[in-house]
Length: 247
Figure 1 (cartoon, rainbow, N blue to C red):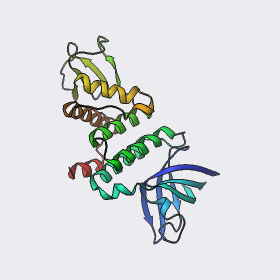
Figure 2: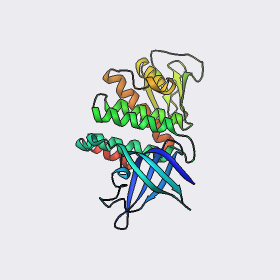
Figure 3: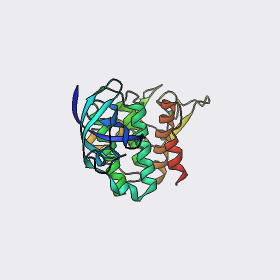
Figure 4: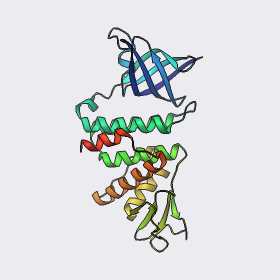
């Protein structure tokens, strides 16, 4: 089976002296693993197109357990990420989320588009990293089937109150009147933070990066998004710890 697609290299491993085993977030088949022979050879055409964080035009063939990379032509290499180790670390966290959340064998253009857009903003440095991180976390979880229930208070149906409370283990919000502190992990949300959270989850893709927040609301959004992500993953990725070690 031959597959022509576009994809982002989200993980790479050297095999032997000159081969690579890569994990690719593809446009058409979700996350796939592929073997790229001689890709570490500088003279091989696959060298540039199978490096980590390279977005490439690919021709793959299906093997027994993995795909094989027959051709790889780079479209975007995100070179500027190498100039900022903090941005590079956050990009690697985004890749780890894709590895864990994007299924195999499904149309996955929206997942790919989300990560590519986030990487472009990271390169430019025009959006706060905490906001980009929350956008990728919440939207990727939503696309993967873990959309939080944040339209209304889970108990009374209220759309807003002076403060809402996001119960992380339930993925639900409660208004100030209905919230009961029973020890469940909870993230308090101001109206601005909740509006941003709803925007990320419910807006058309073209609009999800288009909002601004005060520093306080930004911190609330970031805390809620990260807590919910850890709840769904049920572990804390090493790439996230590395990112925080650089701040």
